[in-house]
Image (cartoon, rainbow, N blue to C red):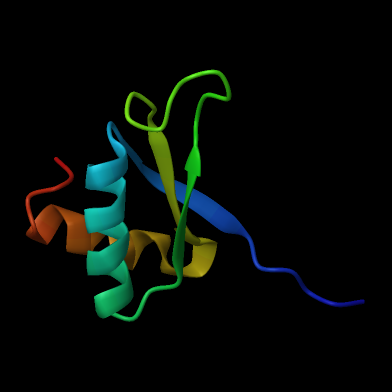
Length: 72
């Protein structure tokens, strides 16, 4: 049986621009990251975005966001 990666939400970004900036930071630091719109019926400009990383990297990724004043 193949093992599938478990993704964990580490942050909710309140704009598409913010989500892209956070994803860029995570990827520059070597994390596998992705985002997902929270609401289906809201435009991308007004939507919130779940920022996800692999569960095994979640604590390190959150620490990176704290160090960059993105997560309090």
